[in-house]
Length: 276
Ligand SMILES: [Zn+2]
Image (cartoon, rainbow, N blue to C red; front, side, top):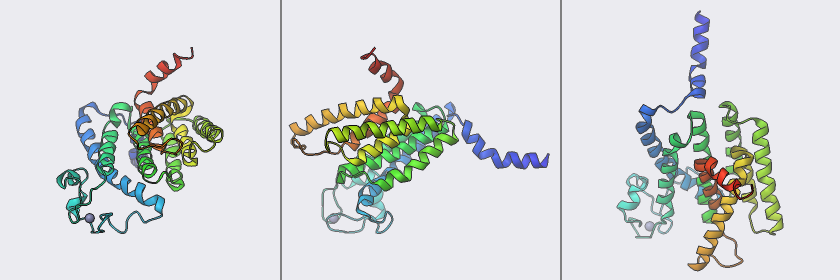
C-alpha cells in the first residue's frame, strides 16, 4: 500500500502532464501567462539570434546600445514597453533602435498565447512552443546575417524528438520519414537551383519535417515558396531585394510552418483539391 502510494507520487507529475488537456475554465489565465512568458522569452530569442551566429556569449556582456555601447538599464529592458516609452531610440545617443526587437517580442508573445487554442493538450502545446521558439530565433538570425546556426538546430533536434516520443505525438518512423523527406526535397532544390537556397534552410526543413510529418512538410514548403516569391517581388518593388542576389528564406519557411500548424488540415484539403 505504502509502496504503491510512493510509486503513484513519483509518477504523478509526469503521468499527469502526459494526459493534461487545456482546461476551458483556466483559459484566460493560461493565455495571459503564455503571453507574458512569450514577451520575456522573445527578448531572449533576439539576443540568441543576434549573438549566436557571431559566436558571442548569450549572457555576458549584458545588452548595450549598438551605437554608443552604453549599457541598458533594467527599465530599458522591458519587452515592447521600453521601446515604445523611448520612442524607439537610445536614451543616451538617440540611435534609432531596430523595430525588429519589439516585433519579435510581440510575435513570440502572440504565438505562445495561441498555443491552447490550436493544440489539444500540454504535450502538443509544448511541442508547438518549442518549435515556435526555434523558428523565432531562426528568423532573427537569418534576417540579421543570412545564417541559420547549426548549433541552434542541433540544440532543438533532440528536444523535439523527445517531446514527440514522450507525449506519444508521433512514432519514430513518422518523425524519421518526415525529417528525411524535408531534408532531401530541399537538398534537391538547393542542388537544382545551384545555390538559390542556403544549406541552413535545408537542415531547418529536416527539423521541421520531423515535427510536421510528410503531409505537413510539403504544405509548409509550398507556402514558404509562395510567401518567398511574394516577398521577393515586393522587395524588388520597394528596392530592398536586388535581382539575382540572395535574400533570407528562413522567415518564409517559418511563416509557412506557423500556418500549417494553425490551419494545416483545412489547407491540406484545399491544396490537394488542385491535384485530385
Ligand atoms: Zn546609444
